[in-house]
Picture 1 (tube, helix red, strand yellow):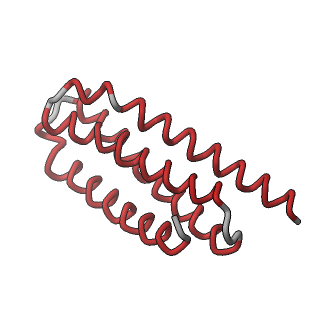
Picture 2: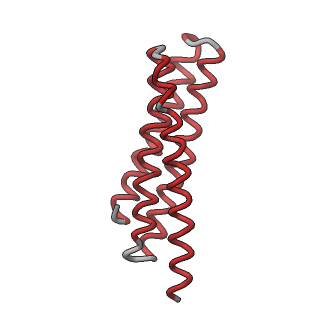
Length: 128
């Protein structure tokens, strides 16, 4: 992902995180059991954290041109938001339990995204 794409994606995901958070607080909370609402809140929190991560990766990508590791980091953070948070949103709103089986794939994508971020920083230090 190019820096501009990372920054746009991160910004859109931040706006969506705010929207999902507000939707949860004002529309969903009274319709879900406390346990399911906790799951929804987890989706919102991880959505926020990793959207901020995309903004960080995008900002550093402006400085670290052509870093394939930062590009990979952005791809995996994006996939993590879609798979991890997305599956939890759908699970809580539709009561579709099998979606919980794919949530760990999103968590693994988050882990890879942050490891690729670290590799990108390490590789940048080696070239200086």
